[in-house]
Structures are given as structure tokens and as C-alpha cells.
Image (cartoon, rainbow, N blue to C red):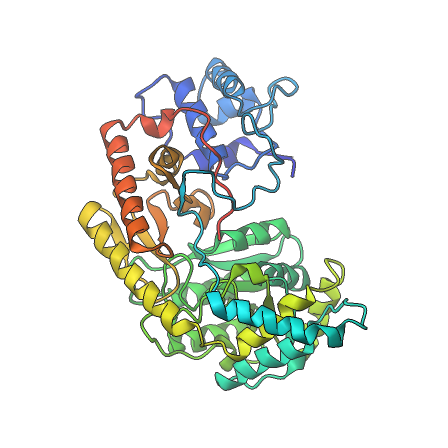
Length: 484
């Protein structure tokens, strides 16, 4: 996706970049390179002209010219025409527009939080699905709404949780991200505002921007009580009138917090009065480690749009998600969906129907394992990185850590030297926020978590011993890829 970056926007992303430890052109080139590698400056984007950036930063044009020349030598800026080179990654061998989630050999992955399949349960569901497939083979195989058995199973699950639901209120999608894209393209026009928690799920921010909408971040409180700043959210709805709000109230990604019923009720009332559609992501709701009792957001209003998935609870390889809404909205979502694709794979949906009907079957063992992993990670962080402030999650898959200095991007770039792949804190926010934070998943077994924390300790020590590394790390590190 090509475009250009104006000098004011670039200056805002750079923050306080000029420490004086190195020549200004070196520090300027290094901070731009780190922003490109962290994904905060997209690829194939034209940087500001030398003259414009020099004027904005109060530098000589010679300094900016030297910085751009350095970026070109390192392979992070194309030659371009004149001074308007475009951002790139050196020596790439695959299209940069589709980075994928593959982990480079030899690296332990902490960039995304996902579990392996729930073993025998998922295998058995697919085996059973194959026995049901012959009944569907005479049909064309295109179904933009979803296999009836799966829609009915999802509806029954909501009804059992206290939210009466019919199959007509369910649209099956190819995962939660697909569901969000359908919702965005139906409910929000270009330039519309979309309220989001800050921090939030990075792929949701990407989807909002891709739809041409403007994310409106509302910060989560620094402490865990209250877990959400509902007053700020209500004020934002009343003042800015966002078209929709994307929220993760159930074991929030990345913090692991859960919203109380009282807070849910207040948000629903505020959304109704402001005309904002509440879109809630419930993909982590089943990973309730502390047995916290809350009602689904849709229990408080039929206007709530709910997004769900089996990716976190059972297996991401199913690529099966859903949207729950009133039937009039579902009809609009279907119309939007048919210009994006014509339906999901049938066998996966048949298997998913089996898993939804016995949703809790693999969870007892899975939750016990996650509780053990969580305690192991929190203990390791306290032992080896006591200066990091780790927020204890109530559920979900990740720990949100506050770092002693704004070094998240630098740690991310340095981490492969120590056998890790990370997702920098700014991936979870807008405008370059969260350099003081890092998300660490506890989806790995304790022995791998110990390796990861010791590697983080070593990377932190290297940064502490050589602060200039935050701006002068060697080139050739792999770029940050997609986060889940």
C-alpha cells in the first residue's frame, strides 16, 4: 500500500529522538530505521522531502540529506526521485504486503499468543465432520451465511449464557478478523471515528485504518481498579460521536483485564444515547483463569454486535468465527460479506459445530495448564526482571509488562540475537505509544518461558550497558511481522 508521510506526522512518531550521544544525522537515520522495522512507518511510503523535514525538525538540510543517504545505504530507503525515497526492508525475498506468522528457524516466538490444537478433541471433530459431509455434497458448497448446524450450535451457546439467540442472528465467518472487517465495512464509512481501548489488539487497529476509519483511543487506567475508564469512554462517545466502538471486555488483549457488569451496563447506555454501535470481541472469553463471573455484553442490549471465534480456545487452524447481532444487521453483514468472499470451507464448519456444542470439553485441562504457565511466567519475571512491572491477568493468554525505560522497540530489534521474536509495545497502540510496555504470552511451557525470560534479561542488560544501542542497532534484523 503506497502513500506518503508528512513531516509533522513523522516528527510525532519519532518523539524525543536526539539524545546528543551521536551525530544528529546518525540518530535521525537510526530512529527512522527502527520505526520502519517496528511497522509504525509502513513499507513503500514516501518520506518527507529533505527540505520539509529539516524545517519541521529545526535541522540543517545537510543533516537530513546525510540521514537519508545512510538509510539508502542500509537498504531502508529506495533511491526514488530527488529526495522522496520510499521505505523498504533490505534484502527481502518475499512480498512485504503479506508477512505471515512463520517463525524464523532458531527463534522462540513471543510475538503472538496462540495455543496448539486441543489435540484429540479437534481431531475427533474433524473425523465426525467427514461422516456428515456426504449429505452436503449435492449442494454447490457456497454459503455466505454459514452451515446451519454451526449457526444453530452458536445460537444455543449464547442462549445457554443468558442471551436468547436464534440461528438467524448468527453469521459464520473465516475467523474473528474476517468478522471485524465485515462489521467495519458495513457500519463505518471512510473517515468515520472508531473508539478503541488503548492499548488494544494490533490487528484490529490495522483493520480500522485499512477501512479508512480513524481510531479514537481511550486509555485504560494505569491501575487495575477500575479496569476501564468508563467516564472517559462515555465522554468520548458524547463529544466525538464515533460510528462504532471496538472493545475487548473479556480478558482484554494485551492486559488480560475483564470488564465488570456495572461497567458494561454503563457503556451500553452511553452507546445508545450517542448512536455508537458497540462491537465486542469475545474470542478470549472462554479463557477464564480466575473464574470471574460476568454476563456477555449482548445481555445488556440487543444492539450490541458480538464477534467470536474458536482460534484462542480450540485452534486457530479452524479459521472459524462468527458475528452475533439482530437479524436486520445480519442481513446487512451478509450483503457486505458477499463482495469479500462467498462463504467459508464446509468441513471446518461441520467440525466447529461439534466443538461449539461441547465447548467446555477441552477447557478444564487447557485452563489448568494456562494457570500453571501464568504463575511460572509471573514468578520468572519477578525473579529475573524485578524492575519490570507485570500486570496480573485474570484470563486470556498474555502478561502486559511495564518496562523501566522506553526501550520496547529496541528490545524487539535486539531480541533475535538472544533467540526471541517479540512484538514491540507500540504495535498495541496509536501514535507510537507504549514504548514503556511489552506483551509476553504464557502459551509456552514453563521450560521455554524460563529460556525466554532469561533471554529478555540478557537483552535488557545489553541495552542498559550500552544505551546508544537503542538508536544504533546493526541493520539486517528481521522486521516485526503480524501479531495475533
